[in-house]
Length: 483
Image 1 (tube, rainbow, N blue to C red):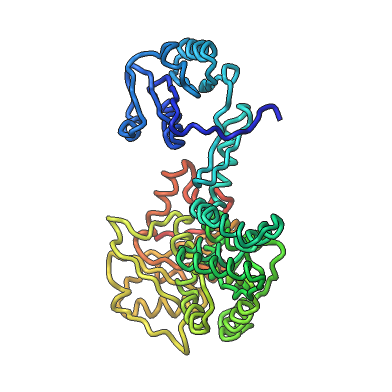
Image 2 (image 1 turned 180 degrees about the vertical axis):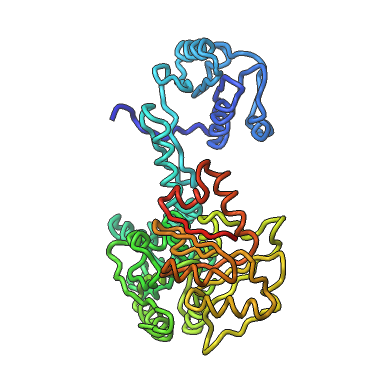
């Protein structure tokens, strides 16, 4: 380790910044956030200073700094954009005995500015010692994705109860085990889910039990999580966090291994997938298992493709779990309609083509489909059909029979957002034959509307080259017919 990582207390203390551009503004902003009194030395200030110039601790001096300006400062930053001016600032700082950071000049720096993940009062700093600031920012981006914004408030909550716990438990080892249970258990779960009042009640109860030497039986919780249409990069930060907390996961047929591999390695995996008209495990048994595992005190992950509230039966599961008194968190996912359409280069709405978008499913409870065809055949709208590949021919024939345009463009996005994505385009009267010829296996989304005609144009304009580059960039294939 070539440098000593420290956190410097500068609250209420003077800090000097030389420079009036973007980098200087970021340095000044960071110091103000840490509570410093900041003086910025520059003849002019860029627009980047507009917001922070109103801060009570901010002062602008329209000239270069002098030795007397910085003698009482605890830190100095120089980011003038002029090499000679930066060297002069560095000389003055060393003469005054003030540590200085000079932007893009590691050899002139007494300290390096790290990339910061700020969840005040939780702060994480990442540095490469000036060797590769870009790499430090990449690591910061990864940490930002897995550390919820609520962690800072959770740390503040823990801090507020330290004295109470110290009075209840005298041994450091006991206090450590207590906080491990709290921060990996229901208190943290409730807090991070936005139920702060409930979290405080749980924490008070845990403290009372700790003081009495009692061990309370914790009720588990169910996480109903939307995993998106297939590409792991489309998972939400919250989904990833809960996937890493799961004790047991019940997952569907449509989930690729790339997503399942992100679940906590020690979690028990239970496959509850369903084929059309062939439910390996009935829905009633799935919800019964969720309740049973939660009553055992486990964190139960119900992982679903797409969004759990978009033809995912998530609403039914929440209804049963709520009736059983089981705590539930629902995490939305990128629905297959938006994810697959985007990866295929098809906007679902467009001012020149569609001012409305209708979602429907090719499956229903019981036999047959009960659809409002008069609403589906309206012009200037997009119709998206989930799980309709098996009934594609009959759906298209019924669409025409109810007044729909047989020449209306149609696209099928098969295995959308995945490496084996394929896109077949045609019209209402030709698409069923094209799908059969292409031997599509699903899962698939069917898109009806003139927005389909934008696919080639948007793909070619977004990524220069052959049409269909939305798919081709990811190594996906595209099958088209004239529309």
